[in-house]
Image (cartoon, rainbow, N blue to C red; front, side, top):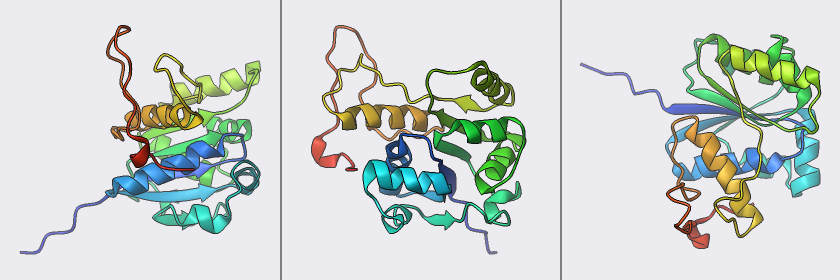
Length: 209
């Protein structure tokens, strides 16, 4: 008797035009290194501009980090349907435009459609919203996402773990985001006690930008 192969763990990673492209790229690197998670990447037009400006990476550099790459305009992609098995979606970073579209169900491209599907199927949606200061409009959109079951996760740096480098700061955020999706990437020290110094993973094993 034959048995169907188990569905791999899948995550959708979207990168929009807000500052902080490093978070999306680092997520791709970490998930690739874990080896047992299929990543589906979508990058908006503004996202590509930000990646080039902030990180100096080409489209080929970024696409090579993902298992599958989808055009932001391909509304007919597999991930646009709730019937496609998927474990969740992370938008890193998430612009206020994308936040607004998701909050109001305005599925005008594959990022916002995939996010809408993630919410309607009751899967985990995490948005690394990046803007400051926040207007009342921004806050109300964040409330709408939270009420719909999504997670608002601003990439706010933490210092209680005594980071030594910018990589430490980025890795801590990425580790906490992946915690929201049940993935322990072992990127950053976990809180134990105010009396104990944190132990960071070896720099030799740390993913590079």
